[in-house]
Length: 301
Image (tube, rainbow, N blue to C red; front, top):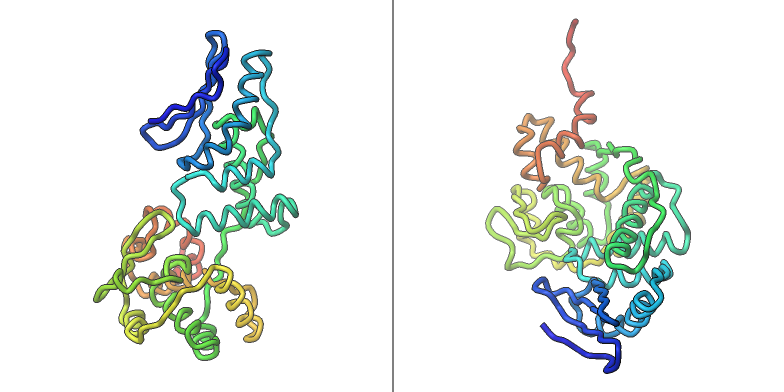
């Protein structure tokens, strides 16, 4: 814990960190005290924020006025710089969605719109909690999206595996399908994390084990050197899909097809849930129940 005095007369301001590592600023004037979280564990960033917040907190003590909301662009910058203990992929998604929202507003695509709404509301909630804004208008529609049910047919998978270029990316696409992993989990693979029949990855909800089928293991044995950015994967995938004439095809559909085909083979939903790294079987059922409705055998009432 460290203390820094910024004024010697009447006003006492102290910057300190708590046990969780987050920095706080306390301003005291004539027996009254205000404390604000700076929302960061970075000492350098905290020091940059002090001059801004100290003056505002002083005026609040002196005049009893609530400080004004900081501009949204500034709030976004602070939010993205703060230590949320995010995975790199989570930071990339938040940066992209908030950046697009600031420049273009809400997107037309229903699913992307819902994701953007959730991210913007989370940013504003953080800003209010940490004293950067007093209040905000919550956006509606964060749960208003259509569940995606696109899966690849056998012929489409063969088309992809035989024609995607360049070759290293072709192997990456095949590995994404045969492992059922998210692209963000496998775009950079550490050989130290690969074992005989499984690998350890940093997943959406933390570190997890990916069980490797023989097809996936065979690809890894060829020693692929993947070190892809999310942007490279997106652009290379789109270029290939357009060239091959596949409609409404996304990289994540490979993962959905992986789970769908396992269920069609009769694998228990519990096993499929574990292979996909879902937090619960309920999550797997929610994603795959609509897909399996067409697979129910003929029945009479």
